[in-house]
Image (cartoon, rainbow, N blue to C red; front, side, top):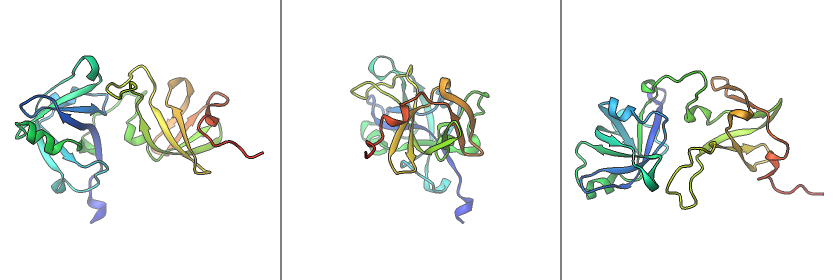
Length: 200
């Protein structure tokens, strides 16, 4: 049954081979990279996967490390049974996922990115729109995430236009992911940046 399907948390997105023995470079989508060294297994599946465990590919993480230089902010993963460049190419583009119930607990000031998607953003008491995704600012060539920059909430407003809102602590008033409600107090003019010009 559909209701029996597990929910998944995305830990990383596999980009390309990184080495000759099957290692892969991946975008890191968790604040806990150490979990790759703590866990015996993860699952590989296409982006947006909502299927069952039997439909995902379970793999064992045998090593991981955080690269420096232009790939800083990413992670290199090596899985059991993926031992060559060809093997690595066959799984490039997949997500590294774990079941929702296996995610690590967060402190009170942190939130999972996956929990933000589907929440409604309010500016004061006024609804702005629904969060469709969260983007991480990167260098112009896309090779490195800018850790000092706030993630961007991609919000679909009621009129259908897209608004990018920095998920910055200075703007936050209350985050209630269970109620699907994010309350913010945004600077004047921020919401108009990506809106179409008003008709006079």
